[in-house]
Amino acid sequence: MADDPLTDFVRTLVGSGLPVLVLSPHLDDAVLSCGGLLGWAGRRAPVTVATLFTEAAPPPYTLSARQYLKQTHAGDAEELFAERRAEDRRVLELLEVGARHVGLVDGLFRRLPRVRPGTERLARLLPELAHVYPTYRLHLSRGRVSAHDADTLRAVGETLDALLPARSGGVLLAPLGVGGHADHVLVRTAAERSGRRVVYYSDFPYNQRAAADAGFTRRHRLVARAWERGLDRKAELVREYRTQADALFPGGRVPRAPEVYLVPETEAVPRVPERPRGARVRTRGGTP
Image 1 (cartoon, one colour):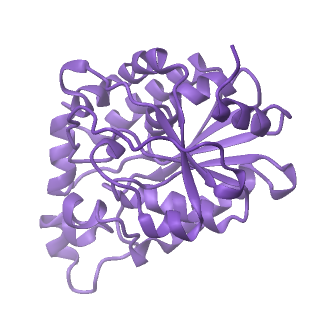
Image 2: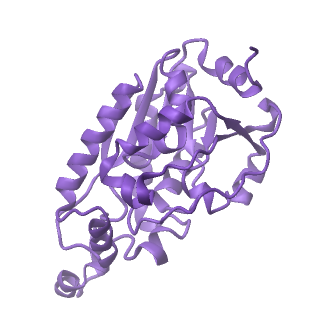
């Protein structure tokens, strides 16, 4: 049976043996959004998943952070993130791809370099005053990167340069930022500014209830393409992220949905149909 057009396109990207770097904001995003493609590409090219925000921070926690810990049945954020890192290493090993945990602090726990003078004591009682994103819904998930995150954006760019040097000629996969989480948008911004060839992946499961940033896709003349290989195995791998799966998928049912990749229309293959509305997905009070 002949391959579908997107498979032919991806084979062109990875078939030469050039490195593929997948930028994953959090410890599950790459597999959630790209697990099917990773299972195929990992056997054909040197693929590395670089997860950027892999650390939490000690208390005091904001209310949004406490709600997230409650959803994941965890009491200590640093212990939870250690478990999440172990989950991610196990899953990526099964996919036969490399894993790099960069060690930046997750947006839900990221603190200001310094609090406003005169508020130090109050910030110990009201941790929101000391955080870059004080709340999840009003700050972290609004689709904007805080001005206080300039150093974080710089660190992501430096990581990208180190892992995929411009002279390598490799391919970069980066999140589209569907759902508006600041960490996802920050990683997308670093990829956009890198000057490299970028394929954007649509952030699952958030693309089941939210649309892509039309301005961004229009500016880069991006068109969507679907990937449907390996979805059964992908659901099994997603459930291996046990600290997150129940919060994301109540009842353990992972919706079967094609992965969606966006490429410049000059490289395009036939269009993917309009996405159907999938099963209802619960929003975590913490990190997508």
